[in-house]
Amino acid sequence: MPPIRIYRNWNTRDAYNVQIEPYKRYYFLCEGRKTEKLYFESLIKNRKELSIHSLIDIDYIERTENDVGISKPEQLIKFAKKLKANKRIVFDKNIDKIIIVFDADVLNSKSQDIINNIIADGESDGSTIIGLTNPAFELFLILHYESSYENTILPNSEEIIKNDWVKKSENKKERFILNLLKREYDIKSKSHSEIENLVHKINIAISQERKINSQIYECKDTITSNIGSIINQIITDDIG
Image 1 (cartoon, one colour):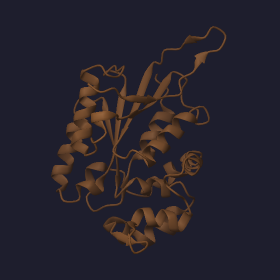
Image 2: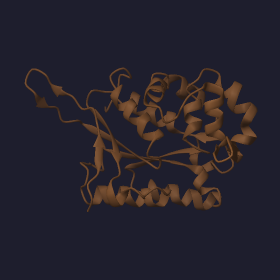
Image 3: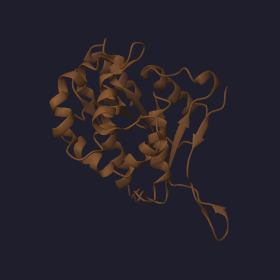
């Protein structure tokens, strides 16, 4: 079975150089392998700034070798179950969580009932959290800007949910939501420094997200994100 890479930023006790064992672990497993990777690795890097409890460990699972092609929601859910069952990660099902993040646009052809069955399968054992954006993760990035709901999302709501292709040049095109992010906020979603800067604005994103739908069981044809809610859950988790 191929190895996996795990990005973490877990500290040691400086005086004794003894590893502190976390009380609880959150693992991020994402459909996207670029933008999402940059974002959640930056989140982990800045965990102290976000005042995340010192006994909570946050890890990003990077797929390798034969696992690289796993990207569909159903595949990610199956992969997460194998990770836990085969002990490829340190995981206590009574305490730890795997957060599976994917875009709903890959499920456009499916009914809400089928989408809900997929989500329910993922969350069935109680140790997995589904993070979903509709249409795509760039929507969540837009939420990091003040008044982005009123100024950007609401006026473009129909185009956002359609998320059609936008022609950039004779041979290049990109999805509407990515084009909107670049056009309105002059950001490159694959730029490490720019994505890291967004992490510092996570409280804005959490607040803005409350203005859109966050009920992932009602995401069909609806602008949706619950990523900020999940991150807020981690930030406020006192493990008590």
